[in-house]
Length: 471
Length: 101
Image 1 (cartoon, each protein chain N blue to C red):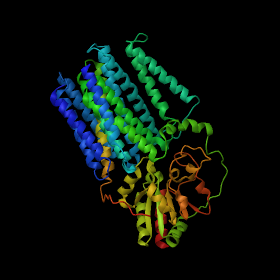
Image 2 (spheres, rainbow over the protein chains, first blue to last red; image 1 turned 90 degrees about the horizontal axis):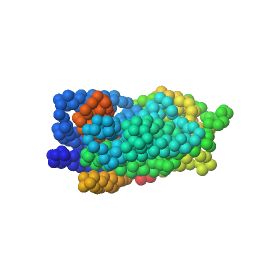
Image 3 (cartoon, rainbow over the protein chains, first blue to last red; image 1 turned 120 degrees about the horizontal axis):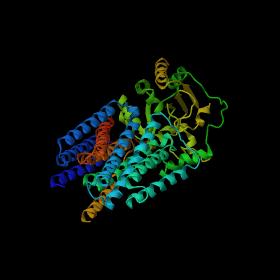
Image 4 (cartoon, each protein chain N blue to C red; image 1 turned 60 degrees about the vertical axis):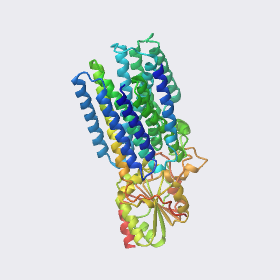
């Protein structure tokens, strides 16, 4: 490697590190992202100028490939709705994992079938790790995408002996890997590698399908760090320092981020990964279909109550708000209530909107001032002296069942927003259907405390705003 | 052998750095941070470019080309989407600890 390339890679790595550092605080986060992007351009330019491009043809291919990929990425990133952000991240992570696996596959094929360069044990181990981890990340991310997009497989999908099946597949991969390292004494090295590719793809799918939607952010974060490790493994294959440093950096920081996320949600990682499997055994909730009475009210009644009886209102927005694009009416409601001299706060659960920080993005976009957004720890004390809590399109994050030691549910142990501490709880919800995690909420049936307004979030909020103005 | 040892040393140092780099991140930045590191592992595009440049038959060319397209999607899409998320935080960013209850 030329010295200039090496220096460029070091500069890029330094910019990545600085960028991640700046991403830890809201004030500097955006510049951190820009720094990291600059680092990426430097690494790429340095590579293109020194890569062994002997024919003009591969130069054109490289340029065309980069342009096409960039265009797809840019258009997708620009056009995606803010509400669909989590699955977009999953998709980009998936293609990254696939890239690492393909690079390793290509290098191995070069060495094995074309004899372009001698293969070493180190390179083969790198190839194996990159193919296995990269492919798991790819297929796992695709499943995460389909779950979040609600195309298929939403909720926890389980089948008998799931863990045993996973273990067998892992053993098969291990056996095939040994075959590759021994030079293919059983199946031939390339055949073994192709089989590993297929088995890893299957393992990625099986790894993610039992995990419920509520835990998807944590899974995506975990797969993100997998892709980092796959990139680092490719770096060992190619003897490329940029890949080793940056891939490892992401792999390690991604692991810590995953742990921080799961502890912010009070969900130990092990429990998430095996939660779906154990939950199916006990089959929580959804058992009794009998009608239970609820306090079904009109928007007018809600508006009247808010106007006449409240001083302090806490609004808890959830995914339903995002889906209905009801951020605007939500803002109107805040303004209307404030114009009547009431205090309005927003309680944002860490996973509101399916990913940490997602709801903050949506509400700031609608114009809600930053300082009105309270996180979990700050809002729970406020709820105690709130006159009303308005829950819009949310269920799991306010479900007291999460704190009920009697029940074993997929959300057990998750910290919740304690809306039941407020004098009244008003749900704006389309139906009684349980939320993303699929657990019934006992608060719905507390007819003393709870008002249920069955409506689309947007329409419901608009009607409440009218009613408050007239009340 | 010397090169491998150097690579392993870099791997270990980078791993410790990565572990230390993330601590006490406010939860509202979890998604952008994940998304940004997601873009950074797009560095594997560099590997894809090297691989495609060395491609010597149709199989390696096709595999390399797909890898380059995917890698570029990861990089550009990743940084772009992170930037869009973070642009939402810009307006009156305030650091002052919120009132006490």
